[in-house]
Structures are given as structure tokens and as C-alpha cells.
Image 1 (cartoon, helix red, strand yellow):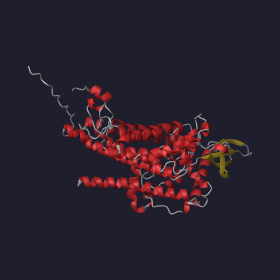
Image 2 (tube, helix red, strand yellow):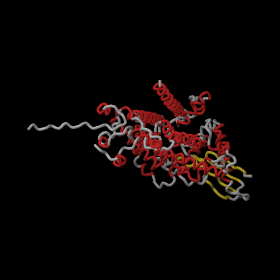
Image 3 (cartoon, chains in turn green, red):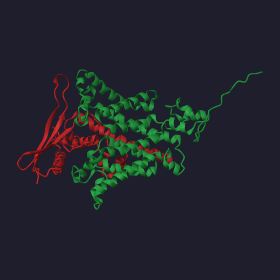
Image 4 (tube, helix red, strand yellow):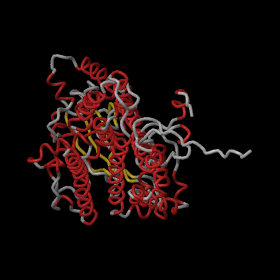
Length: 331
Length: 187
């Protein structure tokens, strides 16, 4: 069966490694872009708070961006910020298109850490999950799938077994993250009675710009209690999706929905986007390339072993469909 | 051989993640049962052990240095800062609620920064070092903010704990509980 390359590009399910690389690059660049001119308020030497005070919280041997700026004391703060912006966006763009992918991922990882996590005073959950994404972009063979590196160095695409293995690592990581997140929430009382939902919706820094009056929830307190219990259930039971495939879609869908609500009602857009990206890459993106006619039937079946048993060894080629036996009439 | 090396590396990777989260869970368990969390023995953290510089560096780069207990065991409070500037004649020039931030992402980061003022909250007064660090931060910030107003000669710093409105029969408006107040003379 012949499938044109154009149709393949349009309708093929996104590759896991491609999704991870492109999504992480976009979000990393976005985190820098969304701060705009206020970046210098937090991360420059002459920022909101003196660097000497912030440095007391530095526990890592990694260099912070302020230390680099101090070292380059001949460069004016404005020029340093301009060069930093150019380098940061360039590395994100290189990672996006897959040019010198391991090098750009590694440098971006160090730069991201130096800016956002080495001095953790202004960091929050997104920074650490973005760090995880960049780390896996460095470790996994993200340069082998739909990247400039692949065409430049004529590389073969990553083997299905390797890609599946990498996806399993990401799945396990997310299982640990959500399980302990749910477990820690369950230790407090406010998630059991809905108080946590009420408080989260009323946090002042997350409510700025929103005109939603949540007073109507007082008439139906069971909604908040139910929401709190659902959050606990989804997070604690998340690892079950790793072992039991029938509930996987429901769990992943629920988690993605939860993060969408967090983005809409709490304004944590970047955090929600990185979590949705990681969940999509871990559970929904394709770990192996299937021919177009098989994707509708095997879209969620990433068990390549059963397919290989039927079609033979995986050798980077598309498996050939078996010929139908036609009955010839006896004349 | 390659397979064993790979398995060891994966084991170390997930071992660090599990250790960090288990330590965080034990800390949360103690914190939820006792208000004097500062006096409880903390489980050893990878990032604080001097001998494990390599492990802490790996944890920092892989994003595994912190536990995943966000909004746990309870949703954390947020703290509102207020800086009132006065001139030589003791006339109010401006009242700033922290720095002027226009980006939502900046507000998220500033709200993370204000978590340090938890040291002023009731029950944490025994943690003197952390409270002194928080005071140093807010004093330094007030000098920086007052630098935009050359006529300012005095700044009144106030830190408030935001208390969300009560539910049910104890309805009310949100409250701002004063935690810290200080007057600083600007030279």
C-alpha cells in the first residue's frame, strides 16, 4: 500500500521524542519571553533584592547568572541582558529545530538552571519541570527524529525499542511525581473537606486579572469537597495507569483536565502547559512509527512486541501487510 | 555490561527522585502533626550533604532536587507587602504594594518570593535565622523601591498575611493580618 509523504506528515501521530524536544524548547523560550522587561528585576545584579542576599540561598556549585554577570564586569548590565537574551533564544531555537541537539539541550539546561533554579528565591514548580524536560531532551535521542541533525549527519531514526524505553522512563518519573504529590496532599485535612480548593481559588496573586466571584460555591460546598477528593484520587491512583492499560486514558485525560482548570482559574499557564506536555509525551505520543493504515486501529497500542511477533523483526522499514488469499472458482 | 551500567544509572536516577520525595513526605508528616516544625529533626537532604556534591549537582540538573508536594499538605498562604514612602515633611509620597509588575509570570515569581515571609507568621518566631533573613530581604527591597523616589526620606514596611474569606456561617471579606511592621530612615 503506497502512502504519500505529505499524507504521512499531516496525519501521522506526533512522535514522542519530537514532541518532547519541540514542546520543551517552546516552553523554555516562552518562560523567558513572558517575563519581558521584568526579567532584570528578578535576575540582574541590580534587581529587586541585592544579589548578596539572594546568594545566601545558593546551595549548588553551578554558576548563577548573576555570578556570570559579576565575572563579566566590563560588560554593561544592558548589554549583558541583550547577549543573554540572544543566547537563550538561540539555544531554544536550535533545540526546537534539532540543530546540535545534545549541545544545545545541555547548554540550555545549564543556562536555565543558572537563571531560574540555582538561586531558588523566585522559582516555582514550572522551573523544575522544565529542568526535567531539558534533562530528558539531553539524555534521550531527540536528535534522531525529524531534526536538522538527522538530515545533516544522515542519522537513522531512533529504534522503537529505544524510544519505548525512554517513554517508560518518563512515565515512571511522572508516576512518582503525581503519587507523592497526592500523598503529601492527603496528609493535610484541607484537601479532604474542600478547604484547599476554596483557598486556592482565592489566593490574591493568582486572582489578579480575574473577575470571577466564587461566592456561589458557598451554596454548594459539596462541589469543592468533591473536587478536592478527585484531585487526591487522580494523583494517588496515577501510577495505576502505568500497569493497567484500560484506565490509562481516563487517568491521563483527568490529569490534563485538572491542569487546564489550574491554568484557567489560577493563571499558572506555564506550569499547566509543561505538565500537559509531559503527560502527552509520556502516554499519548507515539513511541514507534506505524504505517498510516494501522494508526487508527493501533493508536493507543504501543506494544511493539505484539506487532513484531505478527510482522517479523523491526528493521526500520514499514511492515508489509499480509496478502489476502483469494479463492479461485473452479471452472 | 552496557545493560548493567544503564540499569545502575536508571536506579541512581530514580533513587534520587524517590529519596527526595520520601524525605519531603516525612517532613510533611511531621509538619502536619506538630506546629513546632522547626524543632523537628529533618530527614537528611541530598542537597545538604557535603559529601554528596556530585549527587546534589545531578539532582539540580535533572530537576530532582525538590519534592513534588505542591500545595501540600495544605495550600500555602500568600503574603502581601506594602511600602509607604514619606518625604522630609512626613507627607506620604506613595504606597507601593511591592514592585510594579505587569506580567502574570512576574506575579507568579514574586508570589514565590514572598513565601520567605512565612517566617513572620505565628509559630515560627523561634526560627530566628530565617526571620532575620526575611527582614534583611524586605529592608533591602524597600531601599531599592525607594530609590525610584528621590524625595523619599522614610519608608514604612508592612507585611500582611492574606486570609481567604471564611465559608459557611462565618462568612466575611478576606482579611489581611499584619505580621511585620518596620520604619526605616532612608539616607
